[in-house]
Image (tube, rainbow, N blue to C red; front, side, top):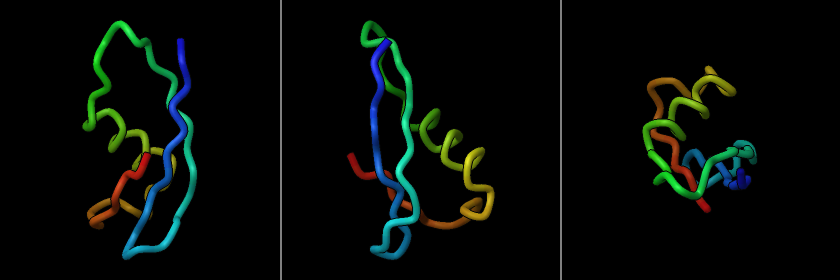
Length: 53
């Protein structure tokens, strides 16, 4: 298992930095990352946030 560290941006501002554990044998799904962000930060639900690596 590897850990991916990424930033969540809203209107050009940093909201938070999150970690995502994944298996490199399988591709990373953007939908899974979006669900992770919404589960950790429910106030971003319905907003146009960006995931930046």
